[in-house]
Amino acid sequence: MKKSGLDVHKDTIFCAVYDGKSYSVVKEFSTTRVSIRELGSYLQSERVKKVAMESTSTYWVPVWDILWELGFDLKLVNPLHIKQMPGRKSDAKDAQWIAELLHKNMLRGSLVPGPLIQELRAYTRESSDRVTFPTSC
Image (cartoon, rainbow, N blue to C red; front, side):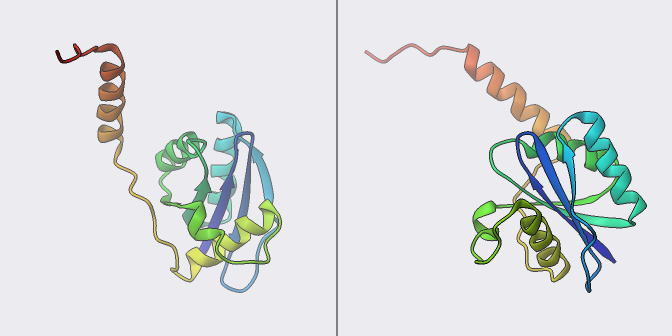
């Protein structure tokens, strides 16, 4: 089964597909909704089911949401766990490395709660920003 590794940045997503023997050409996508949907179509055309992504900050969220809607089995991985290995000097090589580690089942995913919990957390953050508590005397 083919697996994909994504290296997600603010403006770009590097995508590698790995079949256990060789990598596809690493493709670069932008982070617009249209381009992320194109990424999803590309992964479906390659018959990829499992996708691991690495991202700093929250750049992964729209990618996750769209690929989740498209039915992919997703794993968000901590960049610190990926960067431990020397020798990769480019985003394209990072994407390939993520795909290979996913294929070998060597990645530990971060907890990403389901859509309902994410929505509840968003409401909680928004309400806590609006509520001010009196200081103690």
